[in-house]
Image (cartoon, rainbow, N blue to C red; front, top):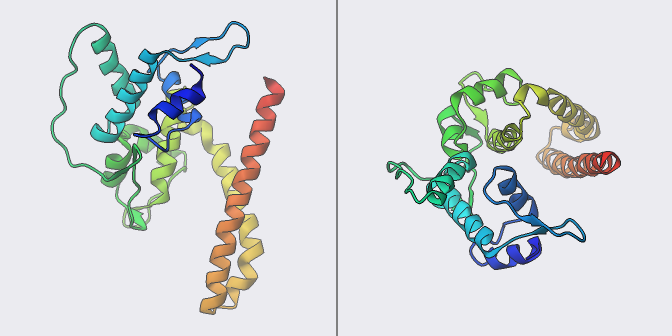
Length: 223
Protein backbone atom coordinates (compact mmCIF):
# COMPACT_ATOMS: atom_id res chain seq x y z
CA UNK A 1 0.00 0.00 0.00
CA UNK A 2 1.19 3.59 -0.57
CA UNK A 3 2.45 5.79 2.25
CA UNK A 4 -0.74 7.88 2.11
CA UNK A 5 -2.85 4.81 2.92
CA UNK A 6 -0.57 3.91 5.83
CA UNK A 7 -1.14 7.36 7.32
CA UNK A 8 -4.89 6.90 6.95
CA UNK A 9 -4.75 3.53 8.75
CA UNK A 10 -2.87 4.86 11.78
CA UNK A 11 -4.41 8.34 11.87
CA UNK A 12 -7.17 7.43 14.33
CA UNK A 13 -4.56 6.61 16.99
CA UNK A 14 -1.80 8.94 15.77
CA UNK A 15 -3.43 11.90 14.01
CA UNK A 16 -0.19 13.91 13.85
CA UNK A 17 1.83 11.28 11.97
CA UNK A 18 3.30 12.51 8.69
CA UNK A 19 5.15 11.14 5.70
CA UNK A 20 8.35 12.57 7.15
CA UNK A 21 7.75 10.61 10.36
CA UNK A 22 7.30 7.37 8.43
CA UNK A 23 10.46 8.02 6.43
CA UNK A 24 12.30 8.61 9.70
CA UNK A 25 11.12 5.21 10.94
CA UNK A 26 12.47 3.70 7.73
CA UNK A 27 15.80 5.47 8.25
CA UNK A 28 16.05 3.87 11.69
CA UNK A 29 15.30 0.41 10.31
CA UNK A 30 11.88 0.13 11.93
CA UNK A 31 10.29 -0.76 8.59
CA UNK A 32 11.64 -1.77 5.21
CA UNK A 33 8.98 -0.89 2.62
CA UNK A 34 9.38 -2.39 -0.81
CA UNK A 35 9.71 -0.23 -3.90
CA UNK A 36 7.23 -0.35 -6.77
CA UNK A 37 8.94 -1.55 -9.93
CA UNK A 38 7.14 0.89 -12.22
CA UNK A 39 7.59 4.15 -10.30
CA UNK A 40 9.93 3.47 -7.37
CA UNK A 41 7.37 4.58 -4.77
CA UNK A 42 7.36 2.95 -1.35
CA UNK A 43 4.95 0.04 -0.93
CA UNK A 44 4.09 -0.89 2.66
CA UNK A 45 2.74 -4.23 3.84
CA UNK A 46 0.30 -4.86 6.68
CA UNK A 47 3.27 -6.10 8.70
CA UNK A 48 4.96 -2.75 8.13
CA UNK A 49 1.85 -0.98 9.42
CA UNK A 50 1.91 -3.05 12.62
CA UNK A 51 5.60 -2.28 13.13
CA UNK A 52 4.83 1.42 12.67
CA UNK A 53 2.03 1.21 15.25
CA UNK A 54 4.35 -0.60 17.64
CA UNK A 55 7.06 2.05 17.24
CA UNK A 56 4.68 4.96 17.70
CA UNK A 57 3.12 3.37 20.78
CA UNK A 58 6.52 2.73 22.30
CA UNK A 59 7.46 6.37 21.74
CA UNK A 60 4.18 7.58 23.19
CA UNK A 61 3.71 5.16 26.08
CA UNK A 62 7.25 4.22 27.10
CA UNK A 63 9.10 7.19 25.65
CA UNK A 64 11.71 4.99 23.99
CA UNK A 65 14.19 6.38 21.47
CA UNK A 66 13.98 4.86 18.00
CA UNK A 67 17.29 3.04 18.41
CA UNK A 68 15.90 1.14 21.41
CA UNK A 69 12.61 0.47 19.61
CA UNK A 70 14.59 -1.01 16.73
CA UNK A 71 16.44 -3.29 19.15
CA UNK A 72 13.15 -4.44 20.67
CA UNK A 73 11.72 -5.19 17.23
CA UNK A 74 14.83 -7.20 16.36
CA UNK A 75 14.27 -9.29 19.50
CA UNK A 76 10.61 -9.79 18.62
CA UNK A 77 11.60 -10.82 15.09
CA UNK A 78 13.77 -13.54 16.66
CA UNK A 79 10.94 -14.70 18.89
CA UNK A 80 12.41 -13.14 22.04
CA UNK A 81 10.78 -10.73 24.46
CA UNK A 82 12.34 -7.30 25.06
CA UNK A 83 13.51 -6.60 28.61
CA UNK A 84 10.74 -4.61 30.34
CA UNK A 85 11.60 -1.09 31.40
CA UNK A 86 11.78 0.03 34.99
CA UNK A 87 8.95 2.42 35.86
CA UNK A 88 9.96 6.03 35.34
CA UNK A 89 8.36 9.42 35.64
CA UNK A 90 6.29 10.13 32.57
CA UNK A 91 5.85 13.28 30.54
CA UNK A 92 2.58 14.42 29.03
CA UNK A 93 2.24 13.30 25.44
CA UNK A 94 0.13 14.56 22.57
CA UNK A 95 -0.66 12.51 19.47
CA UNK A 96 2.33 10.25 20.07
CA UNK A 97 4.75 13.13 20.57
CA UNK A 98 6.10 14.15 23.96
CA UNK A 99 4.75 17.57 24.82
CA UNK A 100 7.11 20.45 25.48
CA UNK A 101 7.27 21.99 28.95
CA UNK A 102 5.08 25.02 29.59
CA UNK A 103 7.86 26.89 31.37
CA UNK A 104 10.23 29.30 29.62
CA UNK A 105 13.41 27.70 31.01
CA UNK A 106 14.29 24.03 31.47
CA UNK A 107 17.04 22.15 33.29
CA UNK A 108 19.43 19.61 31.82
CA UNK A 109 17.43 16.88 33.58
CA UNK A 110 14.20 18.09 31.98
CA UNK A 111 15.77 18.15 28.52
CA UNK A 112 16.98 14.59 29.01
CA UNK A 113 13.55 13.49 30.25
CA UNK A 114 11.73 15.09 27.33
CA UNK A 115 14.12 13.90 24.61
CA UNK A 116 15.99 10.82 25.94
CA UNK A 117 19.20 12.51 24.82
CA UNK A 118 22.39 11.23 26.42
CA UNK A 119 24.54 13.56 28.49
CA UNK A 120 27.39 13.01 26.01
CA UNK A 121 25.29 14.10 23.03
CA UNK A 122 23.92 17.04 24.98
CA UNK A 123 27.47 18.17 25.75
CA UNK A 124 28.29 17.99 22.04
CA UNK A 125 25.35 20.27 21.27
CA UNK A 126 26.50 22.78 23.87
CA UNK A 127 30.06 22.62 22.52
CA UNK A 128 28.73 23.30 19.01
CA UNK A 129 26.74 26.23 20.47
CA UNK A 130 23.48 24.81 19.16
CA UNK A 131 22.04 25.32 22.65
CA UNK A 132 23.41 27.42 25.48
CA UNK A 133 22.69 27.48 29.22
CA UNK A 134 22.15 30.70 31.13
CA UNK A 135 24.09 31.63 34.27
CA UNK A 136 21.86 29.35 36.35
CA UNK A 137 22.53 26.39 34.05
CA UNK A 138 19.04 26.40 32.55
CA UNK A 139 18.12 26.43 28.87
CA UNK A 140 15.41 28.06 26.81
CA UNK A 141 12.43 25.74 26.39
CA UNK A 142 13.16 25.94 22.65
CA UNK A 143 16.22 23.80 23.37
CA UNK A 144 13.92 20.78 23.62
CA UNK A 145 12.92 21.12 19.96
CA UNK A 146 16.53 21.79 18.96
CA UNK A 147 17.74 18.67 20.75
CA UNK A 148 15.05 16.50 19.15
CA UNK A 149 15.98 17.72 15.67
CA UNK A 150 19.71 17.28 16.25
CA UNK A 151 19.14 13.75 17.55
CA UNK A 152 17.27 12.85 14.36
CA UNK A 153 20.14 14.20 12.27
CA UNK A 154 22.73 12.43 14.40
CA UNK A 155 20.86 9.17 13.80
CA UNK A 156 21.72 9.44 10.10
CA UNK A 157 25.35 10.37 10.70
CA UNK A 158 25.24 14.16 11.00
CA UNK A 159 27.18 15.18 14.10
CA UNK A 160 26.29 18.28 16.15
CA UNK A 161 29.60 19.88 15.18
CA UNK A 162 28.53 19.70 11.53
CA UNK A 163 25.50 21.87 12.30
CA UNK A 164 27.35 25.05 13.21
CA UNK A 165 26.44 26.48 9.81
CA UNK A 166 22.76 25.98 10.64
CA UNK A 167 23.27 27.89 13.88
CA UNK A 168 25.07 30.66 11.98
CA UNK A 169 22.18 30.88 9.52
CA UNK A 170 19.73 31.13 12.43
CA UNK A 171 21.82 33.88 14.02
CA UNK A 172 21.83 35.80 10.74
CA UNK A 173 18.04 35.49 10.57
CA UNK A 174 17.74 36.80 14.13
CA UNK A 175 19.96 39.78 13.29
CA UNK A 176 17.79 40.54 10.27
CA UNK A 177 14.60 40.32 12.33
CA UNK A 178 16.10 42.53 15.01
CA UNK A 179 16.81 45.24 12.46
CA UNK A 180 13.17 45.17 11.35
CA UNK A 181 11.47 45.13 14.76
CA UNK A 182 14.11 47.08 16.67
CA UNK A 183 12.59 50.54 16.07
CA UNK A 184 9.17 49.46 17.39
CA UNK A 185 10.70 47.76 20.42
CA UNK A 186 12.78 50.88 21.16
CA UNK A 187 9.61 52.91 21.75
CA UNK A 188 9.47 51.09 25.09
CA UNK A 189 5.70 50.97 25.44
CA UNK A 190 3.66 47.87 26.21
CA UNK A 191 1.83 48.09 22.88
CA UNK A 192 4.98 48.59 20.82
CA UNK A 193 6.78 45.76 22.61
CA UNK A 194 3.87 43.37 22.03
CA UNK A 195 3.75 44.40 18.39
CA UNK A 196 7.49 43.93 17.99
CA UNK A 197 7.29 40.50 19.61
CA UNK A 198 4.48 39.37 17.32
CA UNK A 199 6.20 40.76 14.22
CA UNK A 200 9.41 38.97 15.22
CA UNK A 201 7.58 35.66 15.52
CA UNK A 202 5.85 36.17 12.17
CA UNK A 203 9.13 37.03 10.46
CA UNK A 204 10.80 33.99 12.02
CA UNK A 205 8.08 31.77 10.56
CA UNK A 206 8.46 33.33 7.12
CA UNK A 207 12.25 33.04 7.16
CA UNK A 208 12.01 29.41 8.30
CA UNK A 209 9.70 28.71 5.36
CA UNK A 210 12.14 30.43 3.02
CA UNK A 211 15.07 28.36 4.29
CA UNK A 212 13.02 25.17 3.92
CA UNK A 213 12.04 26.09 0.36
CA UNK A 214 15.61 26.98 -0.60
CA UNK A 215 16.92 23.76 0.93
CA UNK A 216 14.35 21.63 -0.91
CA UNK A 217 15.14 23.50 -4.10
CA UNK A 218 18.81 22.65 -3.67
CA UNK A 219 18.04 19.02 -2.89
CA UNK A 220 15.98 18.71 -6.07
CA UNK A 221 18.89 20.11 -8.08
CA UNK A 222 21.28 17.43 -6.81
CA UNK A 223 18.75 14.56 -6.97
